[in-house]
Image 1 (cartoon, rainbow, N blue to C red):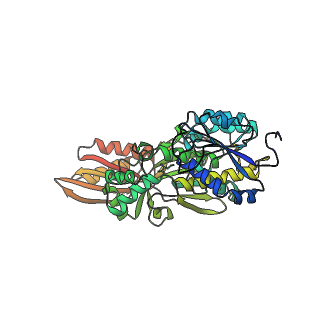
Image 2 (image 1 turned 180 degrees about the vertical axis):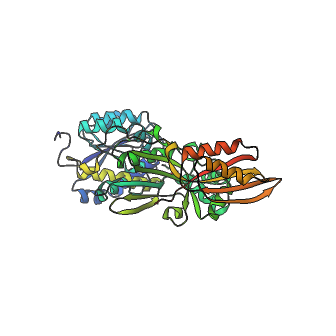
Image 3 (image 1 turned 45 degrees about the vertical axis):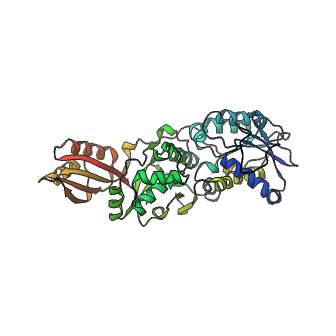
Length: 436
Ligand code: HSE
């Protein structure tokens, strides 16, 4: 390591790329806890330049006049800055600026899930080459410590499975549907009114946000990086009040779950609505809270939960990374840096073996149940339970739960049923996780 880049005494310079909500939280913490941080790492942290698009915008009443600049290179190339905190979000120009900062010998802290999920490979390779660290605690689970505890405190384990509620907006919507009987549209409007959901909620409700996060967790804790294109993604927009109600009757709660699992010879990485047993701790995570259950071969299952977003919780994660780098400035701890190369072999969703909940609308005629049984039998699917929930205008609603079955066999059986004249429609298909 070039000692001139990282002087061993004097203040450690921190530069910011972007200063929106989380950035303002980071500055607030950095200024208000300055003495405490200096005491903990033995040197003060000094806020240097803060690059923003609009320098005139108000920022939580912070006086940043001497720090603000619209020139991003004033941060990425500042000789007195050792750690660059990127909080711009999105890929462009964030990726370009992160790489520029790395090329100028800066350590990186980012909360930008999209740039890490899409371009982590390139960013980590550049960082390895330059001998600097890239820390990403703020990318997943907001204020919940997950990356560092798994890398450091659970370092002795082989991580078998990570399953989590990693999107607060959808968890809020599902909680309102399940506990207050709201419909999806009503719950979404309420989430927007409270500022949880964006005006365009696509990234949350279609699970793009959660897909980035589970790709990052899988890439970080399995032995290869996971390409975002290999992550199976399904949002919550097709869920109905009836599914939520029947899930409850069957002893489950529907959650949008990100799941990453290490299997023989391949990885499973996916995000979709999932029926979680009511007895599992994840079923009790409500509102905008996030939680991540991790299975390690030595520790068994541990769960991390807390605020998955927000100014100060995310700032807590970001500054935790800054302090960890600052404390090991000249020789980043190899346990908590990333050395994975190459893309992992992620199995297609067709190969997933899981239980299914199916809701069908059928003509209330003799032989309907036989048809369903035959379609399932043909593809080796064993039915765990099946009930007819009632009849209206000659149509019956039939709910069934299967034993574990390959996704491709379930799809084939459903296509077979859909072809049958007595089956009017397949209203819902939801995967059921035992989380064992
Ligand atoms: N939109 C995200 C959520 C927060 O609802 O959890 C930022 O990751």
